Structures are given as structure tokens and as C-alpha cells.
Amino acid sequence: MADTPPLRWLVGNELARHRNGAKLSLSDAAEQSGISRNKIANLELGRQAQYPEDIAAVLTAYGVSASDIERLTTLTGRADEAMWWGRGNRSSPTG
Image (cartoon, rainbow, N blue to C red; front, side, top):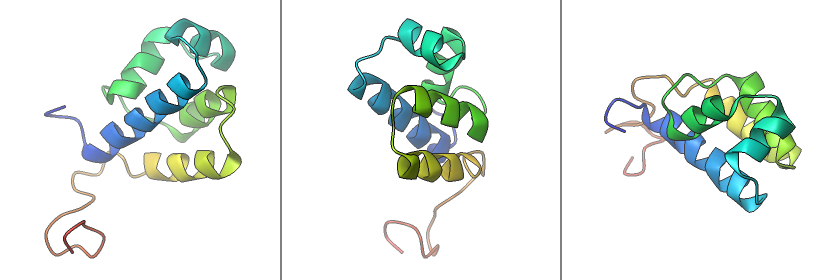
């Protein structure tokens, strides 16, 4: 994860959690979402850019609620920002 932006890593973890919650293998997820197995794996690991339309397609295939899809696609738009939190940032865990 050394070069993976933290927010991309977080979105990837959420994708994996929802896929596992839906009891789908990567192959099943690919078939249901229309996105390749390798791309889903890379999205989950944060190895490639995450686009809102891909995230929405995957989460829809997993049966995720509209509010969770909205939350994660919104985060996806910010996932490649170098620092989405840090010392002095009001949204950081330590503020």
C-alpha cells in the first residue's frame, strides 16, 4: 500500500467487504457487474484509479444500498488526492 493513496485503499477495502458480504467470488462479481475479474481485484487493492461509474456498477451488482453507493462514489472522486487528511485539517482524526 506504500504508493496507494489512503482514500483509494479505503474505498478498495469497502468494495471487498461488500463483495464478501454478498458471498461472491471475484469471478461471480465480474460476471454480475460486467467488469473484469482482474479490474475488480485491482480496485479492491487500490492498484488503479477508481472511477465512480465502475464503483457504482460493482456495488449495484452486490446489492448495496443507494446511500452506500452514493457515499463510496463520492469518496472515489477524491481518492487520488495526495492528502485527504493531515495535521491541522479539521477532517483529520486528530484535528
